[in-house]
Image 1: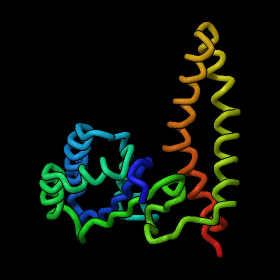
Image 2 (image 1 turned 90 degrees about the vertical axis):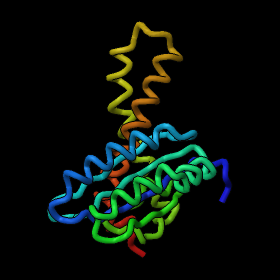
Image 3 (image 1 turned 180 degrees about the vertical axis):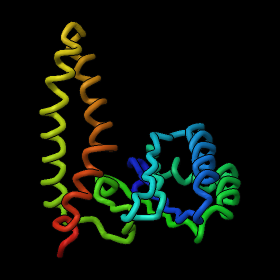
Image 4 (image 1 turned 135 degrees about the horizontal axis):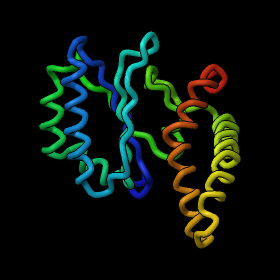
Length: 182
């Protein structure tokens, strides 16, 4: 694996019934510590959905494989992993992904292989087009007095955030039957 590419770790925990509050506190602590490591880009927590999944999924992003590996092997993280053991039913599941693969992972089914590239391309096109059509006019109106390049950078930042945390997870769940068929 190329050590210079953006990398995502998808970590799944099945929390013991009644230990959710302690687990939420654990998430806050480990998230705060992971931010202090070089290359940290962000984390997103997918909480269990009643009737859909009982798993917590942590989507952790670093700028390179090397930086992710430094975090994963750190004494800081090892200490947090020891602290979570009484809160979870089984050892954590970890998948490391690069490229667009993280957009097409279903939290309840971490063993899925990524969908075919043409399906990924179609869904990314739908996500980018719909996000652009909604965000662009709103941001343009709000930032009309800003310099063009700055307004564009703000618009792109909003679009990328929405794509990563809202639009693509929604589209992946909505089209999972088509994406993962065949």
